[in-house]
Figure 1 (spheres, rainbow, N blue to C red):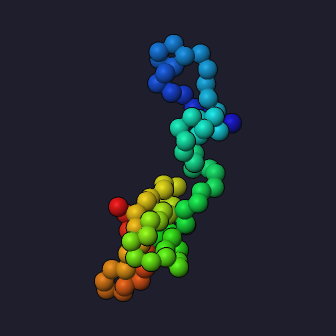
Figure 2 (figure 1 turned 45 degrees about the horizontal axis):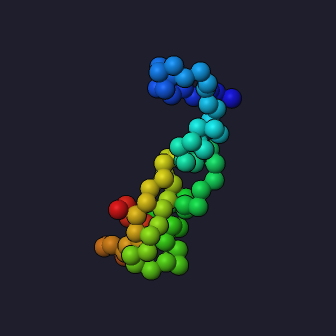
Length: 81
């Protein structure tokens, strides 16, 4: 497994963290684990009403927003906040 380095190493730290450990430190998903967010904007709002909080994943990034139905198609989808 590839070791990730932090700038703290320049300050005299003696350990390297692996991806899983770094994920726990930063509280992120590490782009390799599962997330509760939907795979796209439309599925993020399936069965939700306008203004409901939502999140989706695009190119391994998680985006947060609210469900909106905008012109011209008025299809409910997650719009970034």
